[in-house]
Image (cartoon, rainbow, N blue to C red; front, side, top):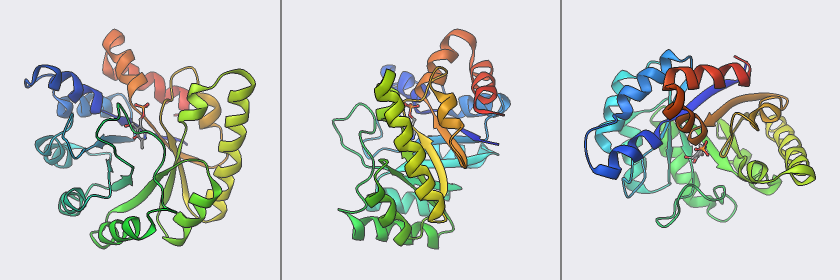
Length: 237
Ligand code: PXP
């Protein structure tokens, strides 16, 4: 059964638009759990543009499903993660000017930096996933680091249409098989919606999908619990 992790950062983005106390991402996490999600995903960015240290601390205390922390390989954030001990850390690249995470982590180009973060997290008992583009060279480097999982970046698939989208899906399938052959757990995410999620959920061995924007967007219309329950049904819950 494919596990659904729901990214709640967008709830904090609405709060930060007014620098107030509502809506609270900690409340949102409880509703996401009630909707049947298997995990809460959240990104503590260096610039704290949405989720902040208080949110992460309270989420660690209150979330009873898997807590997945998306994070850059920055020493300050690695230190917070080792202290907070989420169930899983997903290492992502981070640029200050980006609207959302662009592209996967470059493990090939930044091998030593990533290796150092992976080692510290694993020593703290945190399972590690790497957010990677569907590029076999990146997967090979991830396998050398013996991380637990790879989250395939589905952004290009999500943005494409027609024959181009079919090609991107084939790439995800092919690289997904390489990840599993390397003994790593297969995750995917970014840009997935109620319309495009099914073929990705059906990829052989898909274990976990992390979805944020589309679920929170629908929640504004139908409520968070129903929006999560509907996505959970779609991914095969
Ligand atoms: N997975 C990772 C690694 C991400 O960085 C994000 C965006 O924060 C997501 C999944 C969720 O992407 P979306 O909001 O487009 O569903």
